[in-house]
Image (tube, rainbow, N blue to C red; front, side):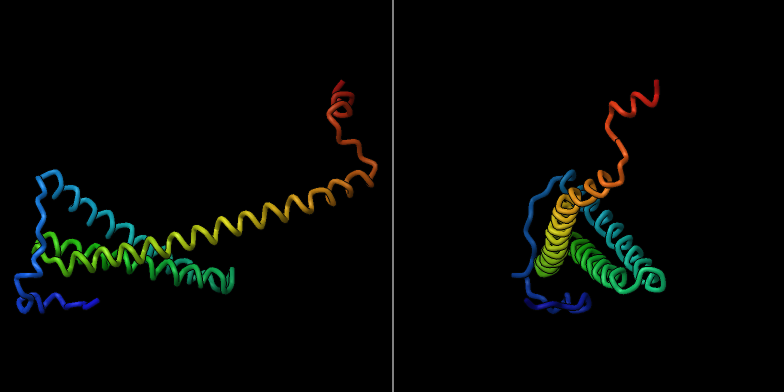
Length: 155
């Protein structure tokens, strides 16, 4: 994939013109997409910076999360800038670049989601595995924690 600078637009031939037929609602939707993409990207960058600043409290994992979040935020802000340029100038290269940035963002987001689901699954397996041991510990203490015993205490 070839990336062009915004200043090189005069050198791009007419074959790179983006052809689309959108009504006013479609253009308004694209403009809103640009605004929200830019907002979410900036918020990701700010959140990532806050994660990175917690290195003194929570150590390395939050810094890694912060770097990934900043990277994802820059992907979104780049996509918003390219999409805005593509809509204003009907440029297919900028549109393709914006779509590639969106693809990268959603790929990273999807992988992180799968990792999160796997981590939650492992935590649930860990809790279920050790739940029996914890209950045995309560049973050995001689404490009757059944509902009928609680009702007798209340009476």
